Length: 545
Image 1 (tube, rainbow, N blue to C red):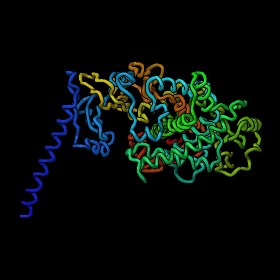
Image 2 (image 1 turned 60 degrees about the vertical axis):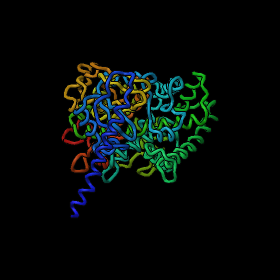
Image 3 (image 1 turned 45 degrees about the vertical axis):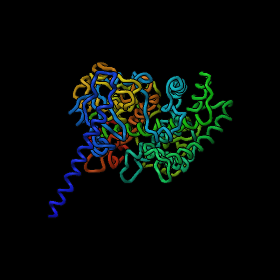
């Protein structure tokens, strides 16, 4: 009797559930643009209200792969409360990226728009976006990058020194996030802060990042409230720094930072940057230089560990270009904070002397040379953009890392007017997501795309030439990542430093699974044991890095 009663109550509930799903699908089928004769893309809108969000969260990257295999390169779904059309393929991606401001408009979650602020580049559209992008282009010009490179290399050297000095394993993902935050603060923004202050602001920034994509509910203990609180702390810190910068603007300064380039760019374009705009842009620059670059740096460490033959070829190129030299002085780390100190360090290196400015510092102080026994026996001289551009195989490796594991799997846009893709209508008001990762994996331009093969970008092959939008790790069109050259510079500088001075092995039994949302990162981290190389040159006996 109990079983019968249970079935009698369960069957109507199941029927009601199935009916609600059918009505939900019908509701979205009728949402097509009736002025267009083309059908909606194939796909499923899932269950009422939640759509396919739960499947997406649980299945990760396999969610999109399975639906692409079932429905094709253009399919519809319903995620995070909105109808979404997912798009894969170079020509489809091209139409979306080049259709910014006409067919589509960039779309960020409401929480991200609130936390980052209304004056940021990501929240700007139309003519305002064009003008702001022109101003920020100065921040990432070749002249600016050459200026940043010296401090960038010092930051990288210091971080690698700390990784190698750790007795146990290092979580490479945590370590690269610390690295990229310091690059943003020290090299990009030109800030000279005490270590304790850097650590504090880094934690505050991580709070902002962890709450950037949250429910847009401004209530006590909500993610949005926490994100706004973290933003306000960062803005207060930035305002104090900017005020000092503005007071010193008329003075001669030996180091130009992003603020200097922004202010000069604004002046050239007859645009007056307010204090609020400067604060929001400063945090946006840290945001742009932080998470995605850390993701790519982690992937670089992972792929070099998985492919020691690739790493040895890069090392051979560095040796051929004279970038791996004997470390005879006591100032090998060149972790030189403060203006002009790098030249003093280089001088004592050349004279094979102990550097008096650095010799008394403790081991893991960020401004130190490391104690004897903890220093590399090889040394990387200061780099230049010209020298880095001569490293052709290194360039292929970085490009292949960004193809194989692009930090961002795709981007969202809001449809401004109904248009056609692959014989389907993309209705006005819907969201469309273009897939970077799937496009890289399925493009016919790439031979054996499932293989990690840097030679595919060699001058002789350069498979990306076949289709301009088959390789889009930084997006494209007017919304193409404005900081892409800085990101590549960080990756190349890190790769040179690591391969010239260190070796590393996996500290776990197996490689971690990679999570792709919201950015590519190893689940539970990538735990690695770093050590300085014990032989100066041509060390080949190790099968690991």
